[in-house]
Image 1 (cartoon, rainbow, N blue to C red):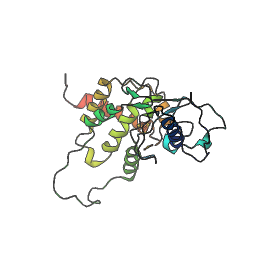
Image 2 (cartoon, rainbow, N blue to C red):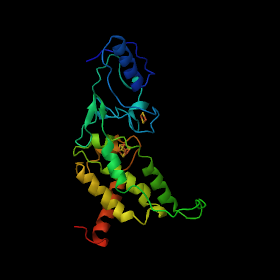
Image 3 (cartoon, rainbow, N blue to C red):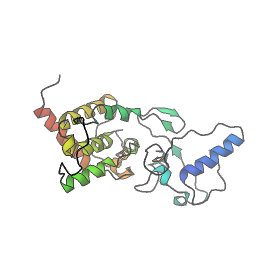
Image 4 (cartoon, rainbow, N blue to C red):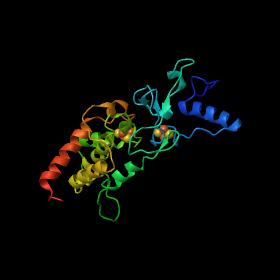
Length: 231
Ligand code: SF4
Ligand code: FES
């Protein structure tokens, strides 16, 4: 347990950890390892379990966007790393989320002809599809959905990635193989199955909706009936 003094309510949660680490370093002690990069909610590096909540108490807020005014004076705050088998702890609060990279590698791409980029309006995209694809593209790969899920499932993340590409015309050629490959990789890496508990979407700082998983499941079903058997 650490006592941290002189914390302004306007400090961010990570600045509070900086203050603590500066003091530890000054006292010749080992600082606490934690991940961070952009500190503005876009890189997905900073996930922490704070008082049992992924990214802390506020909705649609990453750990780096959380401020100390969200806690009461002298509050004891419990901070833990994400806990999920596919996210091994590297040190203190830092986990290895490269399993997400393996899922993206297995299908998070499109095939496109080389040459100069076509005009943006050359391929019409229905407004609803564009909006849903854009919403899914907001996923920052933070891993909160996995940490909050009682099954340790990465389906909300996987569904965000397949939705982002699968709703756009450019993503159609690989749509079904993408869904199948990414879910297969997800399962092989030890993420749990989705049982629609909804904890994932409740903690997602980017508001990725549960419907994305339904869309992914429909694509996986279609793939199972339309693609040649693989095994
Ligand atoms: S779906 Fe949400 S919680 Fe999960 S990795 Fe993406 S942004 Fe983070
Ligand atoms: S440090 Fe980049 S999202 Fe928090």
